[in-house]
Each structure stands twice: as structure tokens, then as C-alpha cells.
Image (cartoon, rainbow, N blue to C red; front, side, top):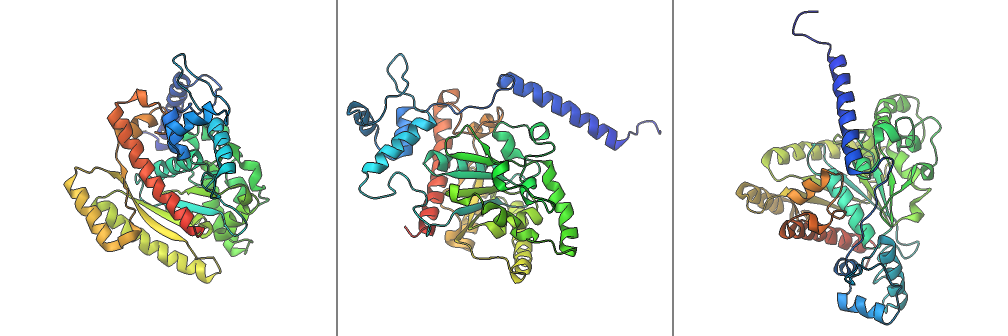
Length: 393
């Protein structure tokens, strides 16, 4: 071999193995061996906010012994687990004057499951960050949520504490439920998570096989066709959930099209700079053309809403402000009012594979943490409102 040259496949394999070992070492430092992630306990003020009541009313519920006592610190401060919060929500709902005040999910057969896709075909637009924070926030607000990772890179699955390249190397991903040859029932691939009210359908590299196998399936007319496979598979479990959230891959392939055809709402994430906006223009053109094709083939193209979610927004950045103003002028109400701010708290939490809802406020500068949480809560308040409108409330 010529000096200075190397076999690219050999080098890639070496780099992959070295990186995998380093990530494994990092995870062992963060979490105990064989341990699964656990959701932290929440303070009284956090719990009251999630329930939509005041902290004084929460204290009164304890004083009147209407809710069970919870673990308290030496100083008497109460700490609430996800299960504690869910139990309190059940108590409050039973005595609520208006049904659904504290349990805001589906109320009957007329309320269809809401299936939300977070997508864009440009990497780095914040799809996974948006999807997981929305899934977790809605679960904390009492919805029954299923997060579905249809990205072969499986970042969403990793954030839930799994190692896709090890845990789901040969089976256990969404691929098993939508493959063309002997698919498994969807219920068999769902994993319970450490988040009360939030389940996961994992992703992994095997999902790439769906992209490779679909052209052959189209030639042989395998049924259901690619665009209907996710919707068909989900029918088995949709009664168990209020909301299903897809984290889509950064490409407009068969997986993304299948997710779109199963969705009732779409969030297109966009970083406010002109390169990303130009890329999104191409994405929208291609999406519309492909949806025309599958629509003519019989796919359902009825959506309750589509929104553009501004991501990684820096309010003091003049050019970003101009781009956001441009988008609002162009798309009007389809641009969400609240942007998801760029925050060191969110990125720092990611270093330990956590989200802002999982980390303790004490780990960050209070203003930094509060700013990030307030931003995410405002975004998800809008998502919540869209869900309620879709159910006619």
C-alpha cells in the first residue's frame, strides 16, 4: 500500500470501536453498571405547577389528608415522584367540577389518538431535543404518551438510557413491527421507561433495512404498503395512549413518509438562519410532491395542524430576529409563538444523556435553568393547546 494511505473501512471500524468503548466508559462513570435511569423527585412548587394548582392548595390537600403523604427531607420539604404526581392527579380529577381539568387526555371514542411527527431533513434542527422534551412534559402533565424513535441513529432511544448498538442490535426496535417479513405485534417492542406515563418504541440501525427493502416490496405489492405500515401497526396499541410522538430521521425517506401518513399533527423544526430556511424550502417542495404521490395511492392526508417550531433561538441575535420575523410574515399563525431557546442548560444536561426535565435545578445557575425550563414549558403549552383544539375543547 502506498505510504500515507489507509483502508477507509478498516479505519472507520477502528474509530467506531474506539468511540463505542469511550462512550461505554463515560456511561459507567455517570450510571452504575447495569443500572437503568430513574426519574428524579420533584419539589412542591414543581409538582403544583404540573398539576395546575397553587403550592398552598397542595399543602392544604396534605393537611386535610385528601392525598397520601410523600417522602420529605430532614427540613420537612416534600419530594414527589412521578407516581405520586399521578396519584394526586387522580384524586383531583375525581372532585373536579369540569371533567378533564386535571386529566387532559382522551375522554372517549370520539377523541382520536393524536400522532405528532417532529421532522426536517436537515440535521441539527433540534428534532430529537424537541420530541423528547415534548413527550416528557406532556407525560408530566398527565397525558399517556408513547415516544416512537424511527431514526436509525436512535438518539431518542439513547436519551432514555439504552444503548441501541448493544440492547437492540438484532431485535426489539420499530423495525420488527413494520418489516415486510413476519412483523411482530407493536406491543411486543414497547419498553416501559422511568417516566410515569411515558413508554418508548426504540429505534436502531436495523431500521435502515426498511429503507432498503421497501423498493422490492413495492415491486411485489406487499400489503400494507410502506406508507401505511406504521399507522396499521399502531392500531393495536393506540387505545392505550393519548399521544404518540415520532422522532423522524433527518431524511425524506420511506420511514418519514410512513410517519407522516400516520400523523395527525406535524412540527417542522427550524433553526432561524437563511441556510436552514433555504434547506427547509427544498424539504417542503419535496414533501409536498411525495405526499401527492402517496395521497393518490390512497394514503390519508388529513392533518389537524402543522406548525413551524423555531429552535435554538437566541433572542439577542439580530439576524435571527430578522429571520423569525420573515417566517412569521410568511407563514403567520403556523409559526409557533414560543421559540425553543438555545440554552447551555439543555446542552449541558445532554452530556449525561439527560433532559432539562430530568436534571436538578441546583446543578445550574438558577437563571440559566429557569430560562430554559420556561422556554420549553411555553412551547409545550402551545402543543397542549393544539391537542385540546383537535379534540374540540
